Length: 77
Image (cartoon, rainbow, N blue to C red; front, side):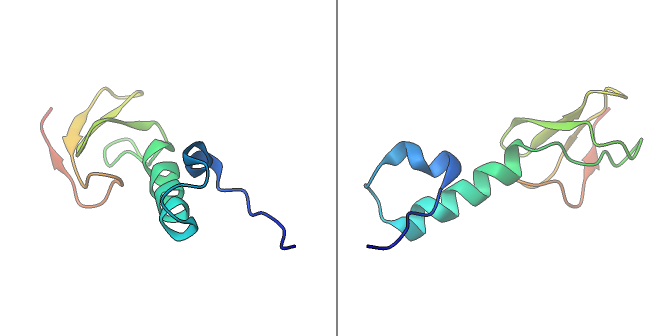
């Protein structure tokens, strides 16, 4: 019997949807929930508010970027 690979957040789906889909989902969710680097103050304090909307907890800047990661930004504040 093969050893089970831990799928982190994808584990909540149990055996449904297939291993590859759960693994991809866990990777994307991990990326979106981690702290990202702020384009203004360069600190790792940026958190996702909604899909594509990000906010820095240090300098208070709010900006738009990709849905799951911070990439090229448009600053609104």
